[in-house]
Image (tube, rainbow, N blue to C red; front, top):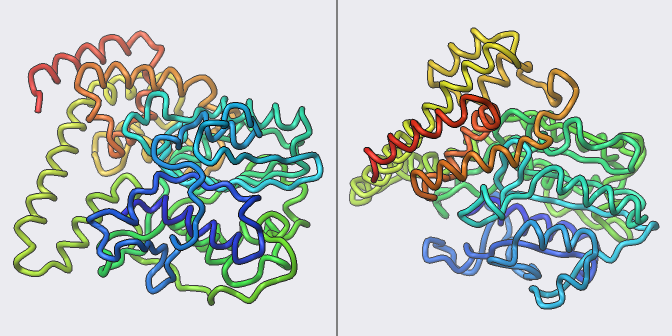
Length: 429
């Protein structure tokens, strides 16, 4: 089950429960899990164990292939003309008097947010500079009073680190630093999948407890950061109003409502977002009937083999990145090289651990290391896809995105791609 869809549906239920009318809410989701044959509770989806059905009543403003970066930015900026023949056509019709709340949940990589289509590295990736340009245009056009963005994605901090100004009344909270994965949590043996994402579940469960009318944005961030022990929850932009503005100012309308439910204990079964498939198969094996084990073991072996294939494909890029980082961007290059060679952590995690500090929300320079690099990165990955077939660009392959960003545009890039092309020609599957 897609945890990002369950996150989005739960977020809608919070706004709906707290009096925000549907005409002021726009929902974008791929919408393929409630009716999926793999869903044992057809027509329902859940975001937490023993929780309510969060799918009931959710508006479907934009679904399937309507869920793209362009539509997202058109909705956010109020581009009504561009949306006339798309989905519901609904958009954010905000003014200088309005507070705007944005919640996004999907995959991510350095400087990009992915959208729910297979070609995530191509037209269906939202680049940081495109998001920031839209936000800047909205600020210039006085299309909001204050804005809050909550972003659930791996390396989501890279969308704002060194990019989001501190004087535009925009406050952003991310599930992770620019250098680490976010995590899924709450494996449910009845539904046989992970139900949500740790950061998203924590901020929404905090909202469900009914504290939002007295709790400030800063207080919620502190609580969620403390609860999310799998990744570092970061904040960016204009912090000036976070200390004094209640969360309800952005996600509620009218008087306080009764709490949806009490606070829950922390999840103990979290898995990195890029490992959800593997984690799910292992959980299913742990709870499998004897008659199910053979098929699940075969599926797990197939997934592990596919990952090994991807590791081989990207090996030349990893080797090139080691040479580059040893000479330029990391004063702990020996640590980085040993970490990568050990193979226990992703290159991104090694960079985070050795070059930035384990809990850093900011790059060492204080500047963005994603500005401009994301398009170079996606261009390099497009060459990999052309050489080896687009299916190699899986969620798992995102672990090599920063490696590609490090190598692209350097003298080593062409040689690395040539080695990849040769390996894929000899080892096609």
